[in-house]
Image (tube, rainbow, N blue to C red; front, top):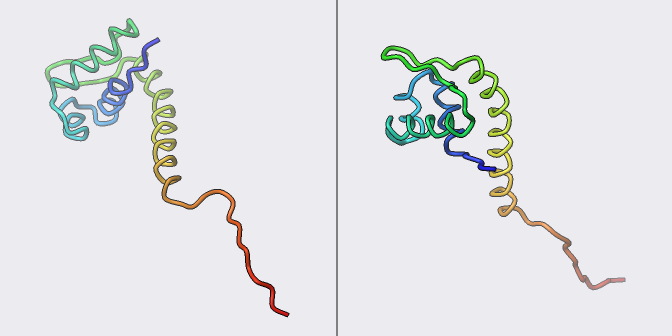
Length: 103
């Protein structure tokens, strides 16, 4: 099974911003890339997730349901990534000290 994280991130950003343009800006890419990612995700799941008109972008009912569940998943991915990065910055393991005893 495919796990399209870049497509999911694009989808969630479009839902959050209600705009392909704003999503593209936030993700530092172009509007056409965002559009292709959304289309690829819709093709993968076989359901229209976003209704597009020349004036508005709105998630479908299925899109809202999907976004709610994916948002939690993406937050967990971000937390795991951040935790892994921070894990390398702190000392870990057993520290053994050998000290002389003074009487």
